[in-house]
Figure 1 (tube, one colour):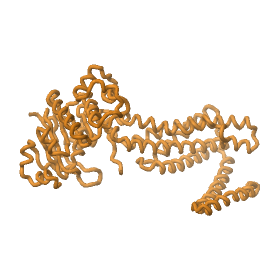
Figure 2 (cartoon, one colour):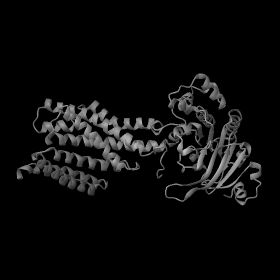
Figure 3 (cartoon, chains in turn blue, brown):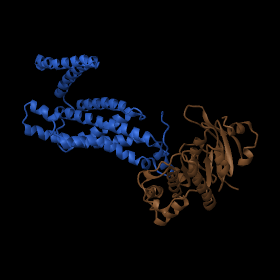
Figure 4 (spheres, each protein chain N blue to C red):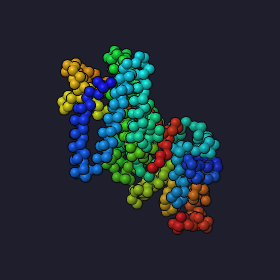
Length: 256
Length: 239
């Protein structure tokens, strides 16, 4: 067990950098010292806990553990994205379903296409990246759609009054929200490797893999994240807009 | 004279708040303009929105040509009963794009001759067709909204204070256009207005709504001399 914490001295070393940041915050009267200390403490506890948990799971047999971990990840991500999507009725449910759909489709396809084997060592970190990215996409889509539907309410009402279905009336807003959700990952993919080395391949290189092997993994990661963004984004777009309309093509009264 | 739209004991509450419409009983005569007036908060806009089910009324309360509107297909209803709002709420694109929107929903194209006819009906010059909707004056925009509504060939027009944001000249042109449409197309018009003077100029019949209840109905000249205390208060701006 003590072998596992072999990096501890290095962690203590990196704490010095946090100490310097706290010093700067104090000196410039930014007031973030307490937040930083909380962050340091939480990150340490949470990551060590996850590390031990993953250690256990990697040793366990059976797909149920993998699915459980992914489900917990999706639930927490859904809760977080749902908070950012406040103002959308049922935002936490919408976010959780969208992230789950994105994750399930992407992971499912990756395994069926034999891109990754179905083992904890691969699926859990990959799922982590997919869920994290889907969370961002979902939050962006929900916030954008919520704001646009509010801002453009007169046009949407006018469209409904001309005989549009809710889908037709919100058409422009739906397209814009989905574009907003997907643009970041597409932009990142265009510039990947030019500005900084992304996390997945950095991790592999640090662990001793050859750079060529590492970049191939990174390519797979970028491609799969585009797919995941599309699945989660599409799901979030359609689930969110329906929260604002009734089945009889009417705008719901929202608390303004 | 037949009732184009009949309202039969309509009561409506917005979710858990107090009732916004109470025991409304009204008949709107076909081919006539009915002015709907009352202080703000009296429920006029909500009543109007019930008529095309932008707000869902209870069943068996509102009838179009004797058919319960909650049992009609809502999309067809909204084509038969068109609406104009306080703001024109035009869509991106040109004037022609806006006017073609309604038919476009059913994948119907707007022929150049039909477009020209609609522009004329709305009192717009034919060379406005390609102009971007964002470059129109307030009065022009509202008339494009009118042409847009007319493209669906509605039987009824609901107007929710369509001139309240316009200057007097533009207001006058819109009023004239609506009066012409009543005469040429036999449109039934229900016109929520903030102005008694406007009602006197345009309406065949007028309804006074106060705190969600119908207080008076009648011909404009008689109503405003009726002596009912609420009518007098409204006329003097005391409500």
